[in-house]
Length: 102
Image (cartoon, rainbow, N blue to C red; front, top):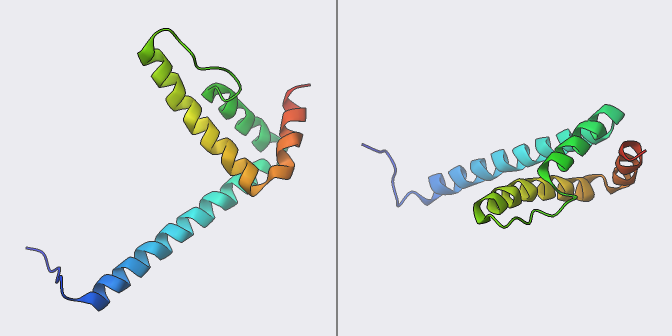
């Protein structure tokens, strides 16, 4: 049996506020982690490898639809990471590129 009362609006509001606060804290932690990772040469090297392995910088085209779908899934994850870099520390992206293409 559940103790959920669908008419207890205050409890639902508290629960929603707690959930939002946990989500906000998780987002802030993730953002701080990305900034920390990108702040060092080693971290930028790790991130570059992740972007390269995800296929961000190459085409994922394949005549095999399933293989292409798999590659696009990997690429999508890499693009998400790249978007985070560009949103949180865009000034470090050119540094990362320069360090890893010499």
